[in-house]
Each structure stands twice: as structure tokens, then as C-alpha cells.
Length: 422
Image (cartoon, rainbow, N blue to C red; front, top):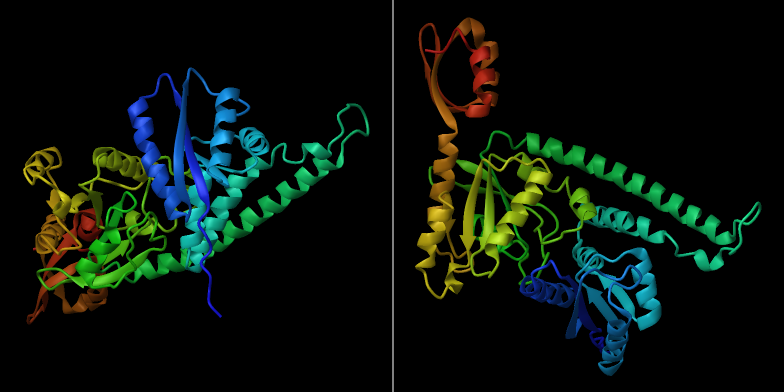
């Protein structure tokens, strides 16, 4: 028996451009949508846009443009059209009826990719939760063909009952998925506690910026890498060694993208907890991308929406091997002072990055000398929990310690050992 490869679905991508929008930007965004559709496994055969003052409430495009789109779909034997815009339930229903093909918006195609790439139980639950949150408002008017058209007592048709049944089922499912995620989040929080004694770094960045490749370069983690969007959904945590031979922790997280659906961000909040609790965030940027500055802003805005502190951030500009002129690095370095320029795939400047990580981590430490009398030996465990012990020397009256304390633990440390600091 031979496994026959199924032919790829053919798709047309489309976007509505308001008169107030930048046309060139909107058309450039279509290129990203094309990559999304191809990542989902379809072949993009053509693209279309319409520029008007405001979109049609019923069909997004005007009636003439919808007819033109229908003819283009038939001519190319396409089974799907994907819009870069967010479509309302009414627009999806009307366009599906008029075009007689599958109609997806940007959120729909991203959810499809996430569902395909979700390998772990946590990722699968997160994706199903996001899909349920996406579907719930779109149930509106899906069953109106079963409802009666006249008013008055006793006129609620079976469609109304079906909507309520479906909504109740989905809401129950959403609550169950949220409960499951809370359980997993509690387990993950316990695992993070066991790693608190190590310097912790987290990778964040726009999707396909090369985070997983950088993870492999730093830790030899052999993490799955593929040149496509959202190849990594689950958080990977690996140990590595800084130049001073101190063990540290590096975690890889899900990538961000322009107009990432808010329900996806909410569902993956627990996955991004690694970034929120890390000592430093490594913001990986594809320096060869035409809109890398916009990518930086999108990632920073997303982190801010999740209340993740970005003051402890190091910019890692990746893929310098793809630059035609290396002189641009000097200008970018001026714009982003705390930055390192690397090529993860070619292992260029990885040692410089490790040195920068160590240097920045060291800045957050204060050196203290302590004398702990033998009558206070119960405090020894607290010293090792709160500090990084540099030296320990046993004396006649007690033990002398030289320790490093993180800035955020300074107040607690000084309160705990106020009479013993030398």
C-alpha cells in the first residue's frame, strides 16, 4: 500500500483597505497572511483587495467586488478564501452563501495553525479554549433559518432553543478547559519554584524570529526547528552554563504576530508565565525582516498587555548572516543600546550574547559580607535560599559569608540579617 499525498487546497487571500489606512502597509500585510495560509497547508493562487470609505456590514466588500471574487475563485478552482480582516458572524455567513467556498478570517487561519502544531496536552487545551472563545460569538444567527418569522407568545422557534443549547455547551466546555489549565498552571508554578536559585532567562519574539534555533545554539537542546510560523507552541525549559561556569535556565515561548487574536493571548497566558518570572527577557528580533521595528513594537505591546515587566529586556538581533550591509548594525545599536547581534543558525556571536547575559545578571546583584554566630545556625538555609553564596569561611565564633543578593530581594535580605551584615 502506498500513501497518496492529498493535493493542497487552493486559496485566494483578500483584504479590505479603508481610505484612512496606508495602502502599501495593507498590501505588505497580505504577504504575511500568505505565509500564514501556506503554513496551514494551502496554496495561495491569487490575492484581491478593495479600497473604500467603509466596509459593507453584510459582506465586507461591495457587491461588485464579491461577484468578481466569486469568478476568480471558480476560475482557479479554489475551495477557500481568507481575509486579513476580522469578519463578523454575519459577514462569514453571507460570504459563504454567496461565494460557495470556505470563508476564513485571520483569526480563523491562526487558530487552525495552532491546532495543527499543538503537540503537548497543555498546548492542546489552550488551543481548544481559544477556539471555543472564538466560536461562541459566531453562533449568533447561525440557526435563524429554523426560527419562526412572526412575533407574539409561543413563537420561539427551535432555532432559538438550538442557539441556547450550543451556547450553554460551549460555555461549560470553556469553564472545564479553564479549570484544567489552572491545574496545569499550578503544577508549572511548583516546577518554577525549584528553579529559583538559578539565573533565569526567557526568549520572546515575533514568530519565526529564530527563538528555537537560538535555544539550540545556547543549550544544545535539540528543540524542534522549522522555517514556518508558530512551529513552537509549548514552553521548553533547558539548563545551560554561563561563562563564569554558573548554571542558568533558558525558556523558549510561543511567538507573537500582528493582530494575534486576543483569546489566543489569553489562552496562552500560562505558557508565557516563564517570561513573567524570568530574571531577564531575551527579545529575539529577525533583523532581516523588512518590518522588524513594527515586530518589536507588537511584541512589547503584547508583553505589556500581559503585565510582563520589560525593564529587564535584552534585544537579540538574529539572522545577521542575511544582512546585505553590516553597516546598518551600527545604526540599530544606537537605537537599541542594550542589544546583541547574532546568527543563531551559523553560531555567530553566541559567546558575546552569553557574556552580555552574565554581565546584565551581575548588575542586578549586591555584594554583602555576613557573620552568622553558631547560635543562629537555623538561618543558614535562609541564606542559601535568598542569596548566591560566593565564599563561606568557618571562624571561631561563627561563619563568615560573602554573598550576592538580587536587587528585588535586597529589602527582605536586610530585614532578615540586619544585625549580621558587616
